[in-house]
Amino acid sequence: MRIDILTLFPEMFQKVFDESIIKRAIQLGKVDIHIVNIRDYTKDVHNKVDDTVYGGGAGMVLMCQPIFDCIRDIKTENSKVIMLTPSGKVYQQKMAYDLSLEKHLILLCGHYEGFDERIKSICDMELSIGDYVLTGGEIPAMVIVDSITRLLPGVITDESHINDSFHNQLLDYPVYTKPRVFEGMEVPEVLLSGDHKKIEEYREKEMHRLTQENRPDLLDK
Image (cartoon, rainbow, N blue to C red; front, side):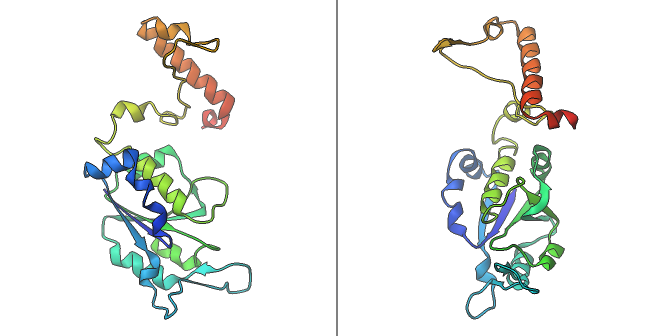
């Protein structure tokens, strides 16, 4: 898979993608990540990529020209262009699975007061990572790249992500490790029993309990 991230702040990504699972995926050749500076495509003599809002209003808006030219330069017939914006569909695990099957993703990071509305015409979808506003699309891009990369074949074991929270619309079950007792808190006896059937039943019940307590909206779905 190839991922191109279009941003005004390329330095933000340097350390993030050089650690942990993403670094391993890159080294294994499972993903090829490119950070593209939108400013490299502006035709403005002062290197501008934004301008004031028609009709008045606070802030600056990203202009069409540099973004159109940037996307047209790197887009192929296999590309899916994703605009990262608070007005997009809320990102969920099912989307991560679907996007992990794509050959080429282009993630467009906004900033300032957002995008000229006409930029949506060259995007395939709009995504948001939650009902709140960030200063730009860079952190959402990191979130999406991380969530997709770990699903690529050979990056982690299938068992690891099959048992993730949200895989079956339930939160994951609680897990424990040594010591057996810590400050009076004990590991549930069933996990020490060696009875795999009882352990699976316990975990299933815990998944439903935790989902009911913390995310009952998932059960409604």
